[in-house]
Image 1 (cartoon, rainbow, N blue to C red):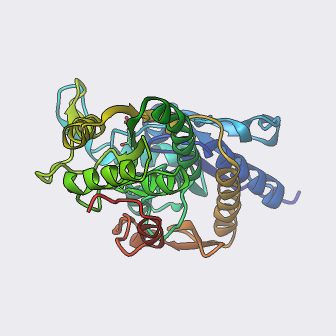
Image 2: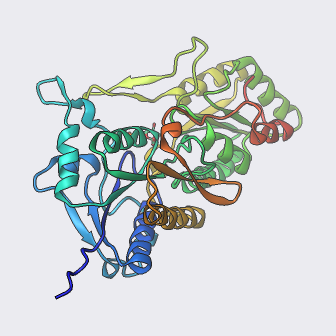
Image 3: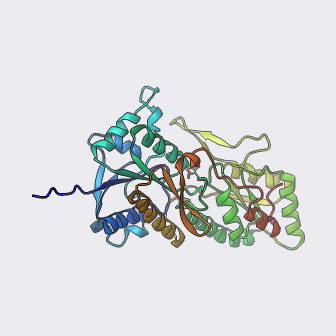
Length: 364
Ligand code: F6P
């Protein structure tokens, strides 16, 4: 009797903070793997933490799961973690332990030919290191609302986060005008100002503050005064959560879990602007609404294109690559280069020039 060929089995997981479009990426991986290559796909639950559990937290993903709604859903159907690096995993006794071996063993137990990881820059570092150590094939799909993964113009989740911030500005403008106020919108983005810059331009902000450009409160006050002089009774300010104070420090808050998180620059700015201009100010901290919600069309498209390309790379026998969006094309780049770089806002960026050209103050 002829020996039956064993089906190729690949795994997919989401890692790091969630964002809109993750389910669209998972769906694309499953569709391409099954319809294009007749492979089996296992979804690994809870990111690398699922690989430490025994049995490994995994579910078979087949086309029957995608009944039409998952593409539209926010979050990730597989769950995710954004803490607990397996190479330095925090243990209950306060010490850290290298649990990378457990993750590698978990992957081996699943009998995977290759793994697709959907994650941000931190996750790519961890997953590619695991792949090197464990000798398994790995392809990354970039996702993050921060859009700070190197070599890709867009990461999954960014566009929807920007749309959410623009929607907030659309809602803040009429109330600012009704009450003659300066409205400050603090957005996420970690150390990169992409969300603030994009949303600020699209949402008609008068001032955009990003971590890459130190601000001078006098310049912001000048801008707001000039708006008043030309008859405008209100102003919109967008600031990134990691904008640094004059001291050069970002504003962080420590939490019971021992983590330091960005928090509070919007309120500090609100008071500084009120003092410097006499204007009434109000602050909105947008927070995690930028991460949740229904993915916009651009994120669904990027996620779909990335998922298909990632599977095709594995089919070609290629590995240690990150799929990326460059010049309206889906391409792939070596992960070893991605993990050594960071994509912050370049001061010469076209959108920085656009903002300045529109007369938006960048605080400098
Ligand atoms: O990296 C994505 C991000 O949303 C950042 O913009 C933000 O600083 C951080 O994650 C928030 O993380 P958490 O979900 O742990 O509060």
